[in-house]
Length: 275
Length: 334
Image (tube, rainbow over all chains, first blue to last red; front, side, top):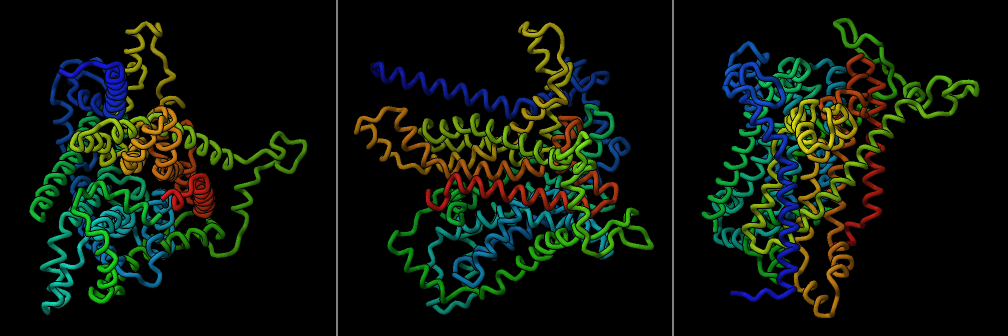
């Protein structure tokens, strides 16, 4: 058994202190969400705050009934389809961009800051700008056109940074070898580059999916006639808040967490395979 | 900034083998010959960004000088008249009675500038709190957790909320802060207060708390990455030369983590300046942020004035980012 010197004791004490601080911090960032999860199982007569008046699935059932929260199912479908399209575009565009940035080219700096601007420009500003412009030229806004446009502007920098990091540590000699053996560019990409960077592409795409699925500010003025899920949640908050909203919040959060789990799973699987 | 951003994500991508240090440069040179044409690779992204980012931002600048017809868009006409009208900017800065010495509002800033000021103040408070609360967490994860597996697991646990909807995280504060909320019950149980207080929800306290909880992950991440990059040998060397723990912290750890702090602060600053949803949910719309003002003017079809507010927000943000970058020279710190 190790002897407890004063130094060791002090070190253990400091670590315990930091550890407890970490636990409090985790409680702080997860606490409200946990309270919301519990309250979504509120009894039929219960309200939006503690104490619980029995436990029931009443509010979850209400969530599934079509009439209660407007067009919830439709909004969910639209959000999922939008997120899937954004995922595909983000994965493809960020891979292409990062491949271009492997070489030096004219305007590379400008393009880099243009991509990063998507991260920096507040959602409300972009929403307002594009909505006003589209109205002025007489084009109606819709979630699958203008909504899709600004979502990709938001997710592209994340995917791009991931792919830049992947290509930064990419061993180019493998591609060179394939070229030397007479492979054309497409074959090199298909047989060498793509399999090696696939984990990165998956990461970039899933970044796109989750960020788009939860995006609210950028879609505010741009979804047009039909709402996406975050817009629907926002709309239901302007009415009287009921535990249905908590059930919706819980479902949506669990779905996001599921996506992250899926992402980590696929990622580690692909990663193990390529190494 | 470029290299910095990339290195931020290096940790996330995992530990692929580093290419041999001397071979890397040679490879770069060689790769210039092969590969797809750059033009084709960047064309789709450039077109997309022009269409959905650059052109809208230019047009909002142009629209801020146009005149509103006041009717919005109808089947017969547009909501905007082209022109060069500085009235919108005048209205933004000068309120009624600004030049009238008799008036109560003589030379006092307009309500819009005050809103910008309030937004700035909230943003600054939340940034400061995020830094004070988040830094020790990043420090703990990077410096005190020795096993890489645990480090990553605990770090991911902090980052998960970033991938969930911030709207829902704002809603989740309602059962905590309300008059019959958890916090009130806790305070009652501890005999700190004898009847439920209303100051928690729809108040500055509740608003600030919720904002800190929602945005703090954005600063823990970058600070963690810059702390994790610090070479343990430097700290060892300092210890050998007799530096105290506090000296090490002040002379080595703080300066080397500043780039991460700056990036985290820029993230939070930019997100908070455009914030509007939390203000409505947790503050009950009792305060205006620049974001809510923009939405209000959009709703009443005064598009040029919404545009002016947006331009001012953008200028204020740029100023803020420049100030942060002046305080911490990210390039030099690399």
